[in-house]
Length: 357
Image (cartoon, rainbow, N blue to C red):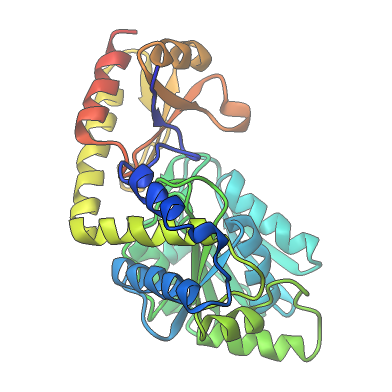
């Protein structure tokens, strides 16, 4: 049986993935030198397509690493000499905070319960914190922080760096990069690709801070920001990159651009509205996030009266795979990904199956 995956990552592969993969294999691109013009052209194409898709200005580099988790470390090494500040409302925002502690930074914490978000008016950043770490979409809990609130936090704290985790929402959030110093995502979620590639969007101001810190402390030996940036100017990476992942990302980003990012955002919202309407009106399901303004449009989390693993098993028998709750919520929540790879018709079919359980 062929399955449709509504899992929050790895997720359903984008419909054009197989075609692009076949071209990659046919053209023997897996064997080309990463110092060749052929590779540089692939690298540049992907960066250019992402700039269009996400409206990233020339002041920000687009860099390729192994994962979003690696990017956490690179950001902390590059932007924090001593102190960071973290908005934590779930497992992944907590891990960013944990990374800062592991690197012996002084990590400040403003934590809210799972299922709740933040507003800029309540965020008071400590005087000596250099970096504000935010999460646009908390994958573990289905909370989505309004982009407007993230922008307001930066406007209140113009002298501090702000980082945005958009791992499970890009390209949905429309960030203003005149206000955002750095943001990042990985490709195995909304971009509908296999795991193994992280994308780091980072400003020249972050580069300058990294160079300043590097003169005093270690900022890591592997993939430090000044080296990544220098190589990126030549459409290269310091070490041999994930050529296949970069090539496929460029092709999927091009596909997204042909559709138009505003159309993708609109369809995402339409599909999310259908799922939330079903959850609110169907006995046995309730939305985990109570405040509608903070409900994720890309990872819907529902409380369940039945054991979630039983629901997942029943849905899988009908050719669809949905995610369980995260951590302690594994048995009494579902996580349903709403990424571009699944169509409106796919969502309607899922709702029909869930309604019969």
